[in-house]
Image 1 (cartoon, rainbow, N blue to C red):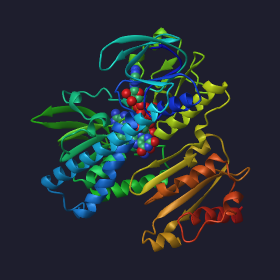
Image 2 (cartoon, helix red, strand yellow):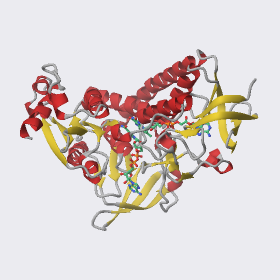
Image 3 (cartoon, rainbow, N blue to C red):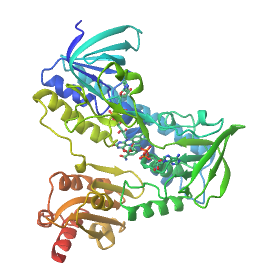
Image 4 (cartoon, helix red, strand yellow):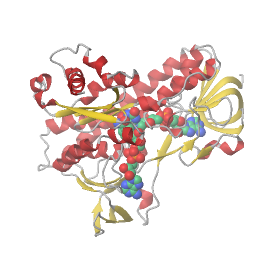
Length: 467
Ligand SMILES: Cc1cc2nc3c(=O)[nH]c(=O)nc-3n(C[C@H](O)[C@H](O)[C@H](O)COP(=O)(O)OP(=O)(O)OC[C@H]3O[C@@H](n4cnc5c(N)ncnc54)[C@H](O)[C@@H]3O)c2cc1C
Ligand SMILES: NC(=O)c1ccc[n+]([C@@H]2O[C@H](COP(=O)([O-])OP(=O)(O)OC[C@H]3O[C@@H](n4cnc5c(N)ncnc54)[C@H](O)[C@@H]3O)[C@@H](O)[C@H]2O)c1
């Protein structure tokens, strides 16, 4: 069997698999190597999908078991709910991963190897095969590194640090703890705090900065999420710092200082550390190549090419945004550049994402703060869903749509939504940003009545008439 390929792709997640399929269907000989032996990456097994499955069922159980902040689930109900969710999750994960593997099999010039890849030079790597332990050297003309990232655990003091949970292991726990300290108030911490609280775990969040979700969503939406968390009974400590994590009698004793500098000692059944991610580069042996990297990841140019011509990097392993959909967007750009020469550039200012909180938040393009920081002269406008026909019909008249607009040419450079089911509106937000629409374009678009999308046109009209 040949060990020479047009393209070798390392990593079978959203940043690797779509590239392998695209390049193979264009006739390139492709080797896709994935150390777990399964397709899907962190997104499928320990990220997007498991968290959203739990979220969905946590909402169902909250309704079914009439859970409220005052009335906790019994330990038996909690265990039964968790076991059932885990079973449903395993079915979905294996179906999705299996379906992706089936799709690969239809591409005759694509070979999949389950194993760990490690560079030995700028055009060779060695794969340590998962099942046989066999080591084989492969050569390539081009390569894509899509090895993702893993949880970063800050250097806390104490004998309990080695036993803390991370997102890599949370979704394979046998049971949910009664109490959980979540260190880190970023997207992972906030999404998990809401869903696990609904399943009866008493959650506390400690965030180093003076706000949860700092800098990632509109500041006025943060207080909506904070209030919602508090109403569920989640304690949030911002501007707070964990000093020590110790373990005794099966519990974690955690010492931390709050925003006033007061010291707290509290105990929790478990501690989850979600303080950010670091790139998976240590075991790639990049020093055998001329690929430049730093602690934030592999350095790539706007074509996603590394410092070695012909080697590209996509997804969480780079400095770019860490989302499954951006990893896939990058996979397509890197593939196109490999096929046709560097002619496609990444543009992360077009990114859209959804925070699956309650209420949900959609963030497309620049936040108001980012736009100012980028030097834009902006105007902003807000639509209040209180007066919205569809929202009233659905008995959910709460939420906001906000535009950040470049004053110079009325281009909408940011679309932000905070409301239940905001994710269903993310598509229009993405199209506005990706196509660089101006207020007039959106104002002149006929939005059907009564739908939540009408707000897009109404807000554009309102801002146009003001200006
Ligand atoms: C709890 C949680 C929730 C999230 N929710 C969302 C969400 O709702 N929406 C969203 O867009 N994003 C979400 N994310 C982020 C998303 O999971 C990542 O951005 C995405 O998985 C990155 O894709 P990737 O292909 O770059 O890396 P990964 O998905 O991590 O895939 C990398 C793959 O490379 C393999 N690998 C690593 N090193 C080697 C090697 N040397 N040899 C062979 N194989 C190797 C790994 O086994 C892995 O399968 C979430 C993340 C977490 C942790
Ligand atoms: N819905 C989604 O699309 C979604 C959901 C979850 C995660 N993600 C992606 O996964 C990535 C990782 O998420 P994350 O939440 O782990 O990382 P993050 O870097 O976005 O947030 C980490 C948080 O931890 C805080 N922190 C850092 N050190 C700390 C310390 N010592 N004590 C207390 N707090 C500390 C940071 O200030 C920050 O608020 C995100 O960048 C996001 O792109 C996306």
